[in-house]
Length: 92
Image (cartoon, rainbow, N blue to C red; front, side):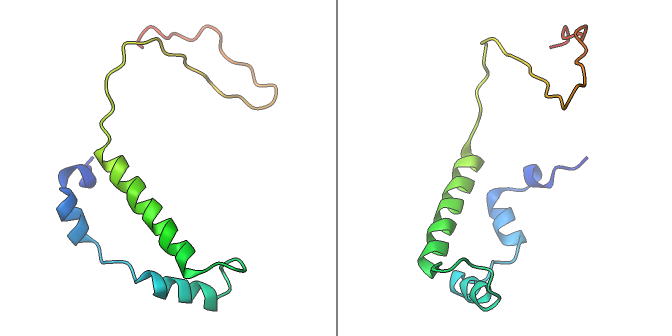
């Protein structure tokens, strides 16, 4: 399977997609279609966009390090379903 994001540089990805519409245009579209909460202003979208840009930047630069610490594996269940207590975890 081809991992497109891994095969392209950040510069390639930036030029591969069309730029989003200006925030003011997005705000106006949301206001006209009544999809924004009462009192929501352009400054709110600008702040949210700033946070999103920052999070994308932080995430793209994140490189997790190896850990030698113990791990705890959990399995969620619904209702009365029972867990298989004889599960083989040796491969981990």
